[in-house]
Length: 429
Image (tube, rainbow, N blue to C red; front, side, top):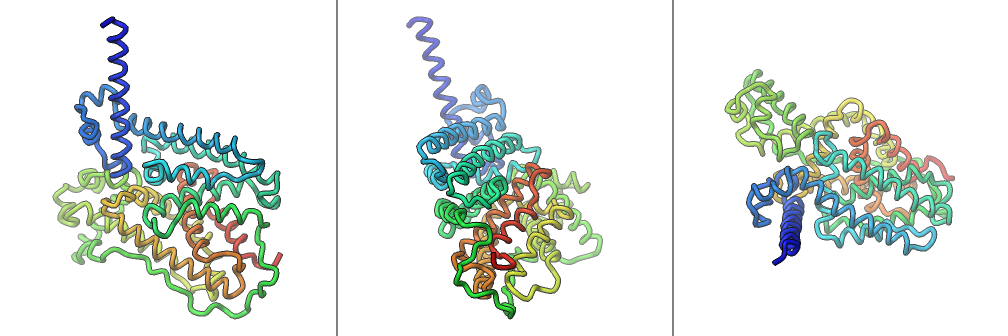
Protein backbone atom coordinates (compact mmCIF):
# COMPACT_ATOMS: atom_id res chain seq x y z
CA UNK A 1 0.00 0.00 0.00
CA UNK A 2 1.34 3.40 -0.93
CA UNK A 3 2.00 6.13 1.62
CA UNK A 4 -0.86 8.19 0.18
CA UNK A 5 -3.22 5.23 0.45
CA UNK A 6 -2.17 4.56 4.04
CA UNK A 7 -2.67 8.22 4.90
CA UNK A 8 -6.09 8.23 3.29
CA UNK A 9 -7.06 5.07 5.16
CA UNK A 10 -6.01 6.58 8.51
CA UNK A 11 -7.93 9.77 7.76
CA UNK A 12 -11.01 7.78 6.88
CA UNK A 13 -10.77 5.78 10.12
CA UNK A 14 -10.25 8.98 12.11
CA UNK A 15 -13.29 10.61 10.48
CA UNK A 16 -15.41 7.50 11.08
CA UNK A 17 -14.39 7.36 14.74
CA UNK A 18 -15.11 11.05 15.18
CA UNK A 19 -18.54 10.65 13.60
CA UNK A 20 -19.26 7.68 15.86
CA UNK A 21 -18.32 9.72 18.93
CA UNK A 22 -20.53 12.65 17.89
CA UNK A 23 -23.46 10.33 17.17
CA UNK A 24 -23.05 8.66 20.57
CA UNK A 25 -22.83 12.02 22.34
CA UNK A 26 -25.95 13.28 20.59
CA UNK A 27 -27.92 10.17 21.55
CA UNK A 28 -26.82 10.37 25.20
CA UNK A 29 -27.35 14.14 25.48
CA UNK A 30 -30.89 13.65 24.17
CA UNK A 31 -31.65 10.63 26.37
CA UNK A 32 -30.09 11.79 29.64
CA UNK A 33 -29.28 15.48 29.25
CA UNK A 34 -25.92 17.18 28.79
CA UNK A 35 -25.20 17.57 32.48
CA UNK A 36 -25.95 13.96 33.35
CA UNK A 37 -23.75 12.50 30.60
CA UNK A 38 -20.03 11.91 31.19
CA UNK A 39 -17.23 11.53 28.68
CA UNK A 40 -16.78 7.94 29.87
CA UNK A 41 -20.45 7.27 29.06
CA UNK A 42 -19.89 8.60 25.55
CA UNK A 43 -16.66 6.67 25.07
CA UNK A 44 -18.38 3.43 26.05
CA UNK A 45 -21.32 4.09 23.71
CA UNK A 46 -18.95 4.90 20.85
CA UNK A 47 -16.78 1.81 21.54
CA UNK A 48 -13.61 3.83 22.05
CA UNK A 49 -11.37 4.26 25.07
CA UNK A 50 -11.61 7.35 27.23
CA UNK A 51 -8.09 8.47 26.18
CA UNK A 52 -9.03 7.70 22.58
CA UNK A 53 -12.05 9.99 22.82
CA UNK A 54 -9.90 12.77 24.29
CA UNK A 55 -7.69 12.47 21.23
CA UNK A 56 -10.65 13.72 19.17
CA UNK A 57 -12.39 16.03 21.66
CA UNK A 58 -10.53 17.63 24.55
CA UNK A 59 -13.66 18.14 26.66
CA UNK A 60 -17.36 17.47 26.90
CA UNK A 61 -17.88 21.14 26.05
CA UNK A 62 -16.14 20.63 22.70
CA UNK A 63 -18.38 17.65 22.00
CA UNK A 64 -21.52 19.62 22.81
CA UNK A 65 -20.38 22.39 20.47
CA UNK A 66 -19.93 19.86 17.68
CA UNK A 67 -23.35 18.27 18.26
CA UNK A 68 -25.10 21.66 18.31
CA UNK A 69 -23.19 22.85 15.24
CA UNK A 70 -24.27 19.78 13.26
CA UNK A 71 -27.92 20.32 14.17
CA UNK A 72 -27.77 24.04 13.43
CA UNK A 73 -26.00 23.59 10.10
CA UNK A 74 -28.70 21.19 8.94
CA UNK A 75 -31.42 23.47 10.31
CA UNK A 76 -30.14 26.57 8.52
CA UNK A 77 -29.86 24.71 5.22
CA UNK A 78 -33.45 23.53 5.58
CA UNK A 79 -34.60 27.05 6.50
CA UNK A 80 -32.90 28.48 3.41
CA UNK A 81 -34.48 25.82 1.19
CA UNK A 82 -37.94 26.48 2.61
CA UNK A 83 -37.53 30.23 2.10
CA UNK A 84 -36.40 29.70 -1.47
CA UNK A 85 -39.36 27.42 -2.22
CA UNK A 86 -41.96 29.62 -0.50
CA UNK A 87 -44.23 31.99 -2.36
CA UNK A 88 -43.98 35.71 -1.69
CA UNK A 89 -45.39 36.54 1.74
CA UNK A 90 -45.74 32.90 2.79
CA UNK A 91 -45.11 32.06 6.44
CA UNK A 92 -42.90 28.99 6.82
CA UNK A 93 -42.49 28.61 10.58
CA UNK A 94 -44.83 25.63 10.89
CA UNK A 95 -42.97 23.95 8.01
CA UNK A 96 -39.65 24.50 9.80
CA UNK A 97 -41.15 23.05 12.99
CA UNK A 98 -42.42 20.05 11.04
CA UNK A 99 -38.92 19.47 9.70
CA UNK A 100 -37.44 19.82 13.20
CA UNK A 101 -39.93 17.32 14.59
CA UNK A 102 -38.77 14.83 11.96
CA UNK A 103 -35.09 15.19 12.93
CA UNK A 104 -34.30 12.61 15.64
CA UNK A 105 -33.13 14.29 18.82
CA UNK A 106 -33.52 17.90 17.64
CA UNK A 107 -36.48 18.91 19.80
CA UNK A 108 -35.22 17.05 22.85
CA UNK A 109 -31.75 18.58 22.70
CA UNK A 110 -32.78 22.18 22.06
CA UNK A 111 -35.70 22.04 24.50
CA UNK A 112 -33.18 21.05 27.16
CA UNK A 113 -30.40 23.41 26.10
CA UNK A 114 -32.60 26.51 25.92
CA UNK A 115 -32.90 26.66 29.69
CA UNK A 116 -29.76 24.78 30.68
CA UNK A 117 -27.51 27.13 28.72
CA UNK A 118 -29.19 30.26 30.10
CA UNK A 119 -26.62 30.24 32.92
CA UNK A 120 -23.62 32.32 31.75
CA UNK A 121 -21.25 29.60 32.97
CA UNK A 122 -22.74 26.96 30.66
CA UNK A 123 -20.43 26.07 27.73
CA UNK A 124 -23.23 26.58 25.20
CA UNK A 125 -24.37 29.96 26.59
CA UNK A 126 -22.66 32.14 23.97
CA UNK A 127 -23.63 29.79 21.15
CA UNK A 128 -27.30 29.81 22.21
CA UNK A 129 -27.31 33.60 22.60
CA UNK A 130 -25.85 33.95 19.09
CA UNK A 131 -28.48 31.48 17.88
CA UNK A 132 -31.24 33.75 19.18
CA UNK A 133 -29.78 36.70 17.30
CA UNK A 134 -29.43 34.70 14.11
CA UNK A 135 -32.94 33.25 14.27
CA UNK A 136 -34.41 36.64 15.15
CA UNK A 137 -32.87 38.09 12.00
CA UNK A 138 -34.14 35.25 9.78
CA UNK A 139 -37.61 35.33 11.34
CA UNK A 140 -37.89 39.10 11.03
CA UNK A 141 -37.09 38.88 7.32
CA UNK A 142 -39.83 36.28 6.79
CA UNK A 143 -42.40 38.25 8.79
CA UNK A 144 -41.50 41.56 7.15
CA UNK A 145 -42.02 39.99 3.74
CA UNK A 146 -45.35 38.55 4.93
CA UNK A 147 -46.45 41.98 6.18
CA UNK A 148 -45.43 43.54 2.85
CA UNK A 149 -47.62 41.06 0.95
CA UNK A 150 -50.59 41.29 3.31
CA UNK A 151 -50.22 37.87 4.96
CA UNK A 152 -49.73 39.69 8.26
CA UNK A 153 -51.93 42.64 9.13
CA UNK A 154 -49.96 45.87 8.56
CA UNK A 155 -50.92 47.20 12.00
CA UNK A 156 -48.88 44.48 13.69
CA UNK A 157 -45.38 45.47 14.86
CA UNK A 158 -43.17 42.93 13.12
CA UNK A 159 -40.14 43.16 15.45
CA UNK A 160 -42.21 42.71 18.60
CA UNK A 161 -44.32 39.94 17.07
CA UNK A 162 -41.11 38.16 16.05
CA UNK A 163 -39.78 38.21 19.61
CA UNK A 164 -43.05 36.86 21.01
CA UNK A 165 -43.32 34.25 18.29
CA UNK A 166 -39.79 32.97 18.91
CA UNK A 167 -40.55 32.85 22.61
CA UNK A 168 -43.75 30.90 22.12
CA UNK A 169 -41.99 28.48 19.78
CA UNK A 170 -39.22 27.81 22.31
CA UNK A 171 -41.75 27.34 25.09
CA UNK A 172 -43.87 24.97 23.00
CA UNK A 173 -40.84 22.79 22.30
CA UNK A 174 -40.28 22.45 26.04
CA UNK A 175 -43.90 21.88 27.10
CA UNK A 176 -44.38 19.31 24.34
CA UNK A 177 -41.60 17.21 25.85
CA UNK A 178 -43.62 16.93 29.06
CA UNK A 179 -47.11 16.77 27.55
CA UNK A 180 -46.72 15.27 24.05
CA UNK A 181 -50.36 14.17 23.90
CA UNK A 182 -51.60 17.68 24.68
CA UNK A 183 -49.16 19.98 22.88
CA UNK A 184 -48.55 19.70 19.13
CA UNK A 185 -45.90 22.27 18.17
CA UNK A 186 -46.64 22.25 14.43
CA UNK A 187 -50.42 22.59 14.86
CA UNK A 188 -50.00 25.40 17.41
CA UNK A 189 -47.72 27.35 15.07
CA UNK A 190 -50.13 26.90 12.17
CA UNK A 191 -52.94 28.32 14.30
CA UNK A 192 -50.80 31.29 15.38
CA UNK A 193 -49.89 32.11 11.79
CA UNK A 194 -53.57 32.27 10.86
CA UNK A 195 -54.23 34.81 13.63
CA UNK A 196 -51.62 37.27 12.33
CA UNK A 197 -53.87 38.12 9.37
CA UNK A 198 -56.23 39.84 11.83
CA UNK A 199 -55.47 43.29 13.27
CA UNK A 200 -54.45 43.50 16.94
CA UNK A 201 -57.45 43.31 19.25
CA UNK A 202 -59.81 42.12 16.51
CA UNK A 203 -63.18 40.85 17.75
CA UNK A 204 -66.06 39.04 16.11
CA UNK A 205 -68.34 41.81 14.76
CA UNK A 206 -71.49 40.18 16.11
CA UNK A 207 -70.04 39.11 19.46
CA UNK A 208 -71.98 40.52 22.43
CA UNK A 209 -70.37 43.36 24.32
CA UNK A 210 -68.52 42.45 27.53
CA UNK A 211 -70.81 41.92 30.47
CA UNK A 212 -70.83 44.23 33.44
CA UNK A 213 -71.23 41.34 35.88
CA UNK A 214 -68.11 39.62 37.18
CA UNK A 215 -67.27 36.06 36.23
CA UNK A 216 -68.03 34.73 39.67
CA UNK A 217 -65.58 32.59 41.67
CA UNK A 218 -62.36 32.28 39.71
CA UNK A 219 -60.43 28.99 39.53
CA UNK A 220 -57.59 28.57 41.98
CA UNK A 221 -54.20 27.57 40.61
CA UNK A 222 -53.15 24.78 42.89
CA UNK A 223 -49.40 24.77 42.47
CA UNK A 224 -48.23 21.14 42.72
CA UNK A 225 -46.12 21.57 45.79
CA UNK A 226 -43.89 18.61 46.49
CA UNK A 227 -44.33 16.79 49.77
CA UNK A 228 -43.96 19.10 52.73
CA UNK A 229 -41.57 16.57 54.28
CA UNK A 230 -39.06 17.53 51.57
CA UNK A 231 -38.43 20.79 53.39
CA UNK A 232 -37.12 18.91 56.38
CA UNK A 233 -38.74 17.87 59.62
CA UNK A 234 -39.56 20.55 62.20
CA UNK A 235 -37.00 20.98 64.88
CA UNK A 236 -34.98 23.54 66.78
CA UNK A 237 -34.77 27.08 65.43
CA UNK A 238 -31.07 26.64 64.64
CA UNK A 239 -31.87 23.55 62.56
CA UNK A 240 -34.61 25.39 60.66
CA UNK A 241 -32.22 28.28 59.94
CA UNK A 242 -29.59 25.84 58.69
CA UNK A 243 -32.11 24.10 56.40
CA UNK A 244 -33.22 27.47 55.05
CA UNK A 245 -29.62 28.35 54.26
CA UNK A 246 -28.98 24.97 52.62
CA UNK A 247 -32.03 25.36 50.37
CA UNK A 248 -31.09 28.94 49.43
CA UNK A 249 -27.54 27.98 48.49
CA UNK A 250 -28.71 24.87 46.64
CA UNK A 251 -31.17 26.99 44.64
CA UNK A 252 -28.39 29.39 43.70
CA UNK A 253 -26.03 26.60 42.65
CA UNK A 254 -28.73 24.69 40.74
CA UNK A 255 -29.56 27.86 38.80
CA UNK A 256 -25.88 28.23 37.82
CA UNK A 257 -24.70 24.68 37.28
CA UNK A 258 -27.88 22.63 37.10
CA UNK A 259 -28.88 19.69 39.25
CA UNK A 260 -26.69 17.15 37.46
CA UNK A 261 -23.42 19.10 37.72
CA UNK A 262 -23.92 20.30 41.30
CA UNK A 263 -22.74 17.87 43.95
CA UNK A 264 -23.71 17.68 47.61
CA UNK A 265 -20.09 18.54 48.38
CA UNK A 266 -20.44 21.75 46.33
CA UNK A 267 -23.53 22.72 48.32
CA UNK A 268 -21.96 21.84 51.67
CA UNK A 269 -18.95 24.01 50.81
CA UNK A 270 -21.21 26.93 49.86
CA UNK A 271 -23.16 26.62 53.12
CA UNK A 272 -19.98 26.24 55.15
CA UNK A 273 -20.78 22.85 56.67
CA UNK A 274 -19.47 19.33 56.25
CA UNK A 275 -21.14 16.96 53.82
CA UNK A 276 -22.21 14.78 56.76
CA UNK A 277 -23.95 17.78 58.36
CA UNK A 278 -25.78 18.51 55.11
CA UNK A 279 -26.85 14.86 54.86
CA UNK A 280 -28.22 15.09 58.39
CA UNK A 281 -30.73 17.65 57.16
CA UNK A 282 -31.26 16.24 53.65
CA UNK A 283 -30.33 12.55 53.39
CA UNK A 284 -30.18 12.66 49.58
CA UNK A 285 -29.63 15.08 46.75
CA UNK A 286 -33.09 14.28 45.38
CA UNK A 287 -34.75 15.30 48.67
CA UNK A 288 -32.83 18.57 48.54
CA UNK A 289 -34.04 19.14 44.98
CA UNK A 290 -37.62 18.62 46.13
CA UNK A 291 -37.07 21.15 48.91
CA UNK A 292 -35.73 23.69 46.40
CA UNK A 293 -38.79 23.24 44.16
CA UNK A 294 -41.13 23.52 47.14
CA UNK A 295 -39.44 26.72 48.26
CA UNK A 296 -39.72 28.20 44.77
CA UNK A 297 -43.44 27.42 44.68
CA UNK A 298 -43.99 28.89 48.13
CA UNK A 299 -42.16 32.10 47.18
CA UNK A 300 -44.30 32.49 44.03
CA UNK A 301 -47.50 31.71 45.94
CA UNK A 302 -46.63 34.26 48.62
CA UNK A 303 -46.00 36.88 45.95
CA UNK A 304 -49.43 36.20 44.45
CA UNK A 305 -51.33 36.63 47.71
CA UNK A 306 -53.86 39.44 47.82
CA UNK A 307 -57.45 40.21 46.92
CA UNK A 308 -58.36 38.20 43.80
CA UNK A 309 -59.73 40.11 40.78
CA UNK A 310 -63.49 39.97 40.27
CA UNK A 311 -63.45 38.77 36.67
CA UNK A 312 -61.31 36.44 34.60
CA UNK A 313 -60.00 39.08 32.20
CA UNK A 314 -58.72 41.16 35.12
CA UNK A 315 -56.91 38.12 36.54
CA UNK A 316 -55.17 37.75 33.18
CA UNK A 317 -54.38 41.43 32.68
CA UNK A 318 -52.46 41.67 35.97
CA UNK A 319 -50.01 38.91 34.99
CA UNK A 320 -47.37 41.37 33.64
CA UNK A 321 -47.17 42.97 37.09
CA UNK A 322 -46.03 39.65 38.53
CA UNK A 323 -43.46 39.30 35.75
CA UNK A 324 -42.04 42.72 36.62
CA UNK A 325 -41.76 41.87 40.30
CA UNK A 326 -40.08 38.54 39.54
CA UNK A 327 -37.47 40.14 37.28
CA UNK A 328 -36.66 42.90 39.78
CA UNK A 329 -36.99 41.12 43.13
CA UNK A 330 -36.61 37.39 42.51
CA UNK A 331 -34.47 36.76 39.42
CA UNK A 332 -33.12 33.64 41.12
CA UNK A 333 -36.57 32.03 40.93
CA UNK A 334 -36.60 32.58 37.17
CA UNK A 335 -33.07 31.24 36.83
CA UNK A 336 -33.63 28.03 38.78
CA UNK A 337 -36.94 27.39 36.99
CA UNK A 338 -35.36 27.89 33.54
CA UNK A 339 -32.44 25.59 34.25
CA UNK A 340 -34.31 22.82 36.07
CA UNK A 341 -37.41 22.73 33.84
CA UNK A 342 -35.18 22.16 30.81
CA UNK A 343 -32.69 19.86 32.53
CA UNK A 344 -35.59 17.66 33.70
CA UNK A 345 -36.81 16.87 30.16
CA UNK A 346 -35.43 13.28 30.26
CA UNK A 347 -38.07 11.11 31.95
CA UNK A 348 -35.49 9.63 34.34
CA UNK A 349 -34.72 13.02 35.90
CA UNK A 350 -36.05 13.25 39.48
CA UNK A 351 -37.92 16.50 38.72
CA UNK A 352 -39.53 15.34 35.45
CA UNK A 353 -42.89 14.35 36.95
CA UNK A 354 -43.02 17.56 38.98
CA UNK A 355 -42.75 19.75 35.89
CA UNK A 356 -45.14 17.58 33.87
CA UNK A 357 -47.78 17.98 36.57
CA UNK A 358 -47.07 21.68 36.91
CA UNK A 359 -47.55 22.30 33.19
CA UNK A 360 -50.74 20.23 33.19
CA UNK A 361 -52.27 22.20 36.05
CA UNK A 362 -51.16 25.56 34.71
CA UNK A 363 -52.77 24.86 31.31
CA UNK A 364 -56.01 23.78 33.00
CA UNK A 365 -56.01 26.94 35.14
CA UNK A 366 -55.44 29.41 32.31
CA UNK A 367 -57.77 27.56 29.94
CA UNK A 368 -60.57 27.98 32.48
CA UNK A 369 -59.75 31.68 32.90
CA UNK A 370 -59.93 32.16 29.14
CA UNK A 371 -63.24 30.25 28.99
CA UNK A 372 -64.69 32.55 31.64
CA UNK A 373 -63.33 35.62 29.83
CA UNK A 374 -64.96 34.39 26.63
CA UNK A 375 -68.27 33.86 28.41
CA UNK A 376 -68.04 37.42 29.75
CA UNK A 377 -67.43 38.72 26.22
CA UNK A 378 -63.86 39.83 27.00
CA UNK A 379 -62.21 37.16 24.81
CA UNK A 380 -63.32 37.08 21.20
CA UNK A 381 -65.28 34.03 20.00
CA UNK A 382 -62.65 33.14 17.35
CA UNK A 383 -60.08 32.43 20.08
CA UNK A 384 -59.77 28.89 21.47
CA UNK A 385 -59.27 28.99 25.29
CA UNK A 386 -57.15 25.82 25.39
CA UNK A 387 -54.89 27.08 22.61
CA UNK A 388 -54.52 30.50 24.26
CA UNK A 389 -53.65 28.90 27.61
CA UNK A 390 -50.90 26.76 26.10
CA UNK A 391 -49.54 29.65 24.03
CA UNK A 392 -49.51 32.03 27.02
CA UNK A 393 -47.54 29.59 29.18
CA UNK A 394 -45.15 28.71 26.35
CA UNK A 395 -44.56 32.34 25.36
CA UNK A 396 -44.03 33.44 28.97
CA UNK A 397 -41.42 30.73 29.51
CA UNK A 398 -39.77 31.57 26.19
CA UNK A 399 -39.61 35.28 27.02
CA UNK A 400 -37.94 34.44 30.31
CA UNK A 401 -35.32 32.37 28.47
CA UNK A 402 -34.63 35.28 26.12
CA UNK A 403 -34.41 37.64 29.10
CA UNK A 404 -31.83 35.39 30.75
CA UNK A 405 -29.65 35.58 27.62
CA UNK A 406 -30.03 39.36 27.23
CA UNK A 407 -31.62 41.15 30.18
CA UNK A 408 -31.30 44.59 28.61
CA UNK A 409 -32.99 43.71 25.32
CA UNK A 410 -36.07 41.76 26.46
CA UNK A 411 -38.82 43.20 28.65
CA UNK A 412 -40.94 40.21 29.64
CA UNK A 413 -43.73 42.26 31.21
CA UNK A 414 -44.02 44.59 28.21
CA UNK A 415 -44.40 41.68 25.80
CA UNK A 416 -46.97 39.98 28.04
CA UNK A 417 -48.91 43.22 28.25
CA UNK A 418 -48.94 43.61 24.45
CA UNK A 419 -50.02 40.00 23.95
CA UNK A 420 -52.87 40.28 26.46
CA UNK A 421 -54.00 43.60 24.94
CA UNK A 422 -54.36 41.74 21.63
CA UNK A 423 -56.37 38.99 23.32
CA UNK A 424 -58.43 41.09 25.72
CA UNK A 425 -58.90 44.59 24.29
CA UNK A 426 -60.41 46.90 26.88
CA UNK A 427 -62.86 48.28 24.33
CA UNK A 428 -64.08 47.38 20.88
CA UNK A 429 -61.87 48.61 18.08
